[in-house]
Structures are given as C-alpha cells and as structure tokens.
Amino acid sequence: MSSMENATFVRPAYFIISGFIGIPNIRYYYVFLFFVYIVSVLGNTTVMAVICLDPNLRTPKYVAVFNLALVDLIGSSALVPKVFDIFLFNHPYIPYNDCLTFMFFCYACVSMQALNLVALSYDRLIAIVLPLHYPVKVTHRFMVSLIASFWFIVITGTLIAVVLLTRLSFCKSVVIDSYFCDYNLIYQLSCNDNTLNASLGHFLPVLILWLPLIFILLSYSCIGYALSKVATFQERVKAFKTCTAHLLLVAIFFLPVMMTFVTFNTIHPNARIITMSLTSVFPPMLNPIIYVLQTEEIKVSVKKILKIK
Image (cartoon, rainbow, N blue to C red; front, side):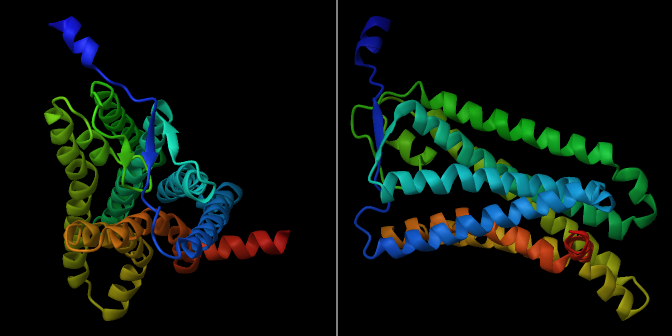
C-alpha cells in the first residue's frame, strides 16, 4: 500500500502565481507599490535608527515599537520585490521550495504584526489602568521576553503549516490565483487528503488575528472604564493621547483584514486580489509615519538628532 502511495505522490517542480495577470492597467498599480515600498523602507529604517540613537527611547514600550518596525521592514522586503519579480519581470514560475519559503516569511511577518500590537496594547493598559505598577510590571526584560515568546509562537505555527504542505500531492493544477504563495489556495490544489491543512488554515487565523483583536478590544474597554473615573476632562484627554498612535495602528491593520473577510465572496476576483495586497503593504508604510507624527518622544528625538547632525 505504501509503495502505491509513493508512486502516486506528486511534488511539482514549481507553482505559477497568476494573481495580477489579466487585471487592466495593472502597471499603474506597480508604480504605486514601488512608492509604498520605498516609503516603508525609509520610514521603518528611520524609526529603528532613532530608537537606537536616542538613549531616552530605550524603554520597554520602544522595544515593541522597534520590533514592529523591524517586522514591517522584513515583511515589505519579503513581499514587494518578489511581487515585482513575478509580475513586472514576468517570472510567474516559482520553484516549489522557494514558494514555501516565500509563504513562510509572508505569514510570519503578518502574524508578528498582530501580536506586536498586543504587546503595545498591554503597555498602554498597564500605563493607564495601573500607572503606579507600570515600572514593576512592564520592565525591559519583560517586554523582551514577551516579544521573544511571540516570535516563538509565530515561527512554530508558520513552520508547522508549511511542513504540513509537504505531505500533499499535487496532480490537479499548480496555478495559484493570488499575488503570493497563499496557504489556503495551495492546499486546495492538492489531490490527496488535506483535512489537516484545512483545519490548520481555519485555526491559525483565530490564533494570530482574532484572539489578538479580542485582547486589544478588551484592553481598551478597561482603559475606557479607567479614564471615565479620572477627575477632569483634561486628564482624560491627556491620557487618551498616549493611545492615539496605537489605536491608529490597530485600525490600519485590522479593519482592512476584516473588510476582506466580510466581502471575500461578494466582490470581483480582481478587486479581491488588489484589496488583499493593499492590506499587506499599507500597514508597513503607515506605521512609521503614524509613530513619527503622533508620538511626542519620537518627534523630539528626530528634531534633536537632526539638530546634532
């Protein structure tokens, strides 16, 4: 029986990424993607450099901010240049192992973005609800340990998903109708039992997207309740201002993802692919801009560094 299974097992030499092929005027979108990528690289590099150069920013909160900028930089560099190579330079054939590697980096970075927002929401929760306990509960060591544990969860979960794909046989098609090596689309192309892959495909979004979102919403419910007890309106506004940058990051990351899930089966396939690609490239571009414009400490640091230079 095992010899028959081995005889019928088919591992393709390559997959074909066809997502943007056939979309009208797509060349203008490539120009837009190039602009987004350049801004992402410059913005996130700037945030990381400012945090490294200014000793005043070496606090637990900015450990998480630095990690978010690093993840955004890695995620953008893993996705956008490969998209240009596939579609702009007409290389839609991506080798099997390269496709799995491409998938790993895309999913790992998106997952880490969500969990990083959890770390930042915990920082704001303790700072506002339990301000006297903040120096004890949110230490540099604690934040580094939290970020490291998130990386472990993300890498382990993504590796399991990728490894489970290697047990699938592909004897139907190797065409992936997406802009990257999409896990859900790949396992659906298999011709042997993919029940385990399908289960994991439903479980991982819950673990790395919806549970973080629930935690963040609960955190801000507690923050809102705590602020309602503050004596003066000015004190409430001052405390809330410390959350504006994080709230904008949460909205930019989660709202497009939720809209994509809600409208997935109701919009045109071309529009769906464009929308999904925007949800991947927009947050890494906007995150550093928001932190530079909305965070007073970073604005002061940028001015100080530029003045010194």
